Length: 218
Image (cartoon, rainbow, N blue to C red; front, side):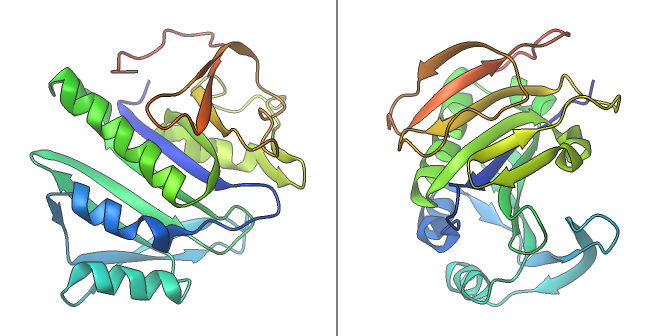
């Protein structure tokens, strides 16, 4: 099992994410943002977005530079740190699955104090609120292999879990926005659903697994 975790933010059905609304919160929370970012582009093979690994240096102030990229619908990856803890944020606007995603090493996270871990989850939740995300899908970084299984429809997200591909049991939970237009995604089995604090904007649906759930602050 991968030690890397991801949180994928998807828009509400028929809507677009509003990442520029979350830029200030992102920059205020983060202790450090690397000024060299990686641009992303669409693969002709599967119509999904991937990093080109081509570094581009953005000017200061970083908040304004990031907002400028977002306003131009540029897709890119930024590397951040909160104190000693590194993580990445990806912004994808093209292809068939527009989304924003957070990626981090869960093994490193497990050594952080519980309060730090809880604050990190609150940061992701508040960023999702600010960006008007309809869904947050939490799983292994290997969830990349699941992107081919996910469809965004006018009724919400749909998971195709029938094909025998790796990591079918690596989705841990799905958060749905409590707006009436974001039903729990079809294709997953849920063991319980609980309202999320502190915002109350999302409901967390815990996904049934065939392997042990990772240790986390949630």
